[in-house]
Length: 320
Image (cartoon, rainbow, N blue to C red; front, top):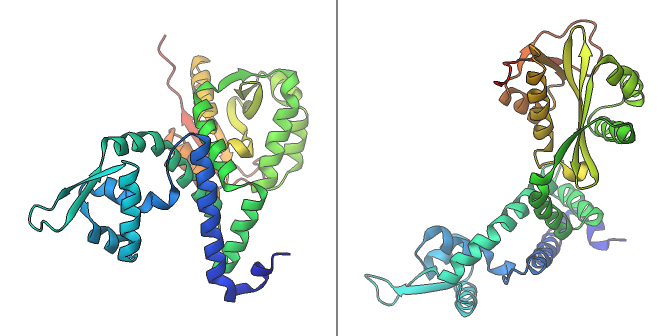
């Protein structure tokens, strides 16, 4: 039993301290994994010096609202690691102006992709609604228990290294279970499974392939990580059944699948594509519009009960 969690709001300070210490330990694991010789506790001061390109001890102290001894101690550690250097202040010779050293600039190039992944995972782990801060902390720590902060960051960094090696492959019946499982997981996460979904997903050859439709898969090494379909419907093709595995979301795999479908449709000299969605999926709608889809009326006999928006993309054939 987590006694600290059971104490509720009165334990707020201790909870925040525990989470802070956990994040620092986990971030250090990430640095060590990628052979980055850096201490996460030095980050705020180092980042200010990097951003300001010439800043005094007092200015750093005022920015961070820490004690002068604490700021001085951090600066001394950065100096000892040869990550920063300093010059005398042009007017007040008693003051020192701190800059990144050449070693510090080199570190920035190495560590920036890691910082980007740390920021991405923090947003992913904290981007949910709650009724109070203590409830937010409860959910946050539950996520850490499910997958550690360091593991999530390391996976994100390695995924970025692999994203350019993702290949789009056409349907093969050996992938039919992936088509079903990826889509069912997505539907259960964001909506619910309708009878029409179950029927189509269980029989992709009958409802899509045999009707001259197409199914594509995003393949990372030997793993299927995403799928999408172009399904014939009333003389046009519907872009549908797009799903990406949970651990691979956030790497634009869905956009890569969609672009492949658009290019494929242009090669077929199709005039347009349609899709059905729901406005609660704000990010998805934003991406559809980014690719040129525009909203059109939803017919009364729409095959999807959850759909409240229909979109269309007029196609221009690719130049040969």
